[in-house]
Length: 261
Length: 238
Image 1 (cartoon, each protein chain N blue to C red):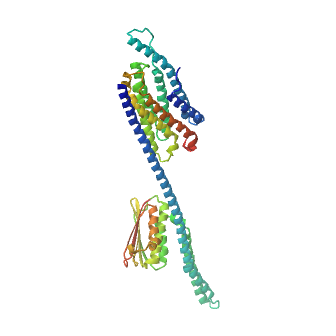
Image 2: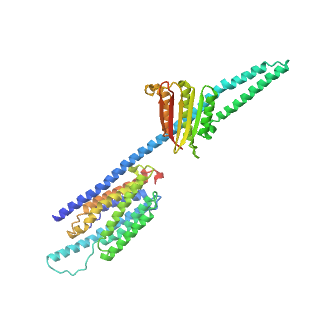
Image 3: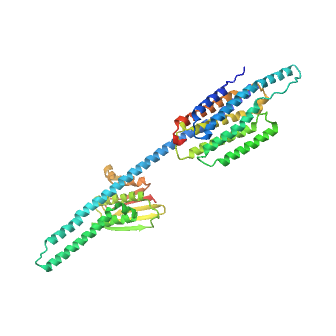
């Protein structure tokens, strides 16, 4: 009888002792499954990031080509046409007038060469990004200023960190291009203020305009999808936050804060 | 007639055969040594069964003499415990080395394993000094069980901490450790009660069904682990 009791106690204790490892093993399995899901999500995020980066690179190139196309047509093309007209109108019999026209043609040709040099620099888009985000932003502003339609103020705060992040730079630069495109297409602005601030561990880019503004709440899904959604998505893949402040008739301000580098 | 084939020996034999098939060409020495370790375990079990019979006969004679109040003048026969005490040394060393191999990917386990072996060695010598080799080395066995439980849990911790993902359902080291954890965790209760159990009826081995269940779990997990290592795991994981 006593043996029977002891036997039962030992069996019960052993059973209890076996429950503990069973729970541990079950926990390990659950945790491991979560780990697998986490790794899959990380891989997916990496793939999305790479795809988005490639798309951004393509878009920056497209934008550059558009700028070049427009510049060739509007600027260099006009200069060369004018040079051709000037040279055609040279009267060989009248050396004094001919000299003036040749000088004018030389001047036009020199301006064309200057413009071509600037275009050449823009064509080397990769090198532009390699020079750093600040330099790329300055070039972009330079081209916008050339149109003569906008008064642009550029403010840069803080020092760029010694080690930059080329992937983030490219995405931030593309976001800036998209915002400026939106301003050009829809805002009817005359003044644009761009500020780039390198804060501790983050970067803040702010674009303000004095255009017609808009009511964020009343934007249709299509309107939002055209610009803002893309900007938010782009900023999101580099863990950035976008805040948009705008009222009808009072311009707009878009601020992007990104962990940096 | 001696019954050499019991649940325990059957489980050990099946596990040994699976180890022989799966691990004979294994690249890791410690996994190949598993075959020798299992062969030794089976041999000890067989010798244990062989030695058990004369001991039980001796105990029976003593009991009958006690009942009849007769003084028997025969040489004492020792139980088979001494051979299991010898096996204990091999168990401690081999399983410790196995843990050292399993942990080497994650950490420098040498100080931990060496300290554990030194502690076990001291306890073993202490027990030999106290009651000789013919009595069960219960303290050493309990200490060894606790150590293996700690090593197993540490292995799990390292596995969880690792960045890489392993499919645990076919991950050989995981099943090897799981077998050890279940066996030694479950065995602790029997070991703690051993002193009380021994004072009752020595012929009725109360812990035998428990021990058999634990043996089946241990060798079941180990056999599956060997199969995983031989056929299911990727070469890069081994």
